[in-house]
Amino acid sequence: MEFKSTKEIANTYIKVLVHGGAGAGKTRLCATVKNPIILSAEGGLLSLADEDIPVVEIKSIEDLMEAYSFLKSDTKFDWICIDSISEISEVLLSAEKDKTNDPRKAYGETQERMMKLMRSFRDLDKNIYFSAKQVRIKDEVTGGLVYGPSAIGQKLGPAMPYLFDEVFALHTWKDEDGIVQRALQTTKDAQYEAKDRSGKLEHIEPADLGKIYDKIKGEK
Image (cartoon, rainbow, N blue to C red; front, side, top):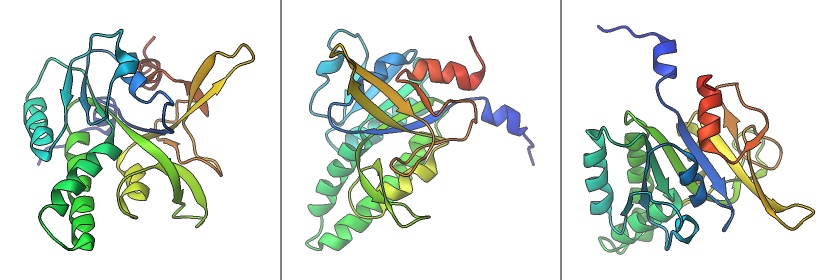
């Protein structure tokens, strides 16, 4: 039996889930981390047109599994950015619908496979950033509605935050000069699903995952 220290395990990598509305800047967050690779199921990466970041397009479950197999042994990339988990769930649902005429079975199989896939990527020896669309979901504690991550079916979205130590809500607004500003909410309130298990973040942090990584790790 091999024993490890909680300090040793906790200080290795961070796993982040960010949810936000359309056009909020979720994809742009990929450019704020060191040495990333993007697994993209989104329609376009126009917001990163000025960057030079390697991208793998995810158009099928086969694409996703091939990327996973490669990244299991990869030593080149420091961050895996999966953009977005909501779109990937739609890709998987389409594949499941091709296998059966029973919609309930297709949704059930997709949700089960998505949970396994998210755990598999989360447990890689990498820093992981999952982006997700934002919808109102049921709070499992209060029974009220809060804004949280979106995925197919009724169970997957509300279950996703439990897989991650860091869950952030991305906010976007225009300042008095009409300039778009962005920030990450790191702790939960009555309106937004969020959490910070590190305990090192303010309620609102800049929309910069690199700076958040440094803060969690205590690096300057």
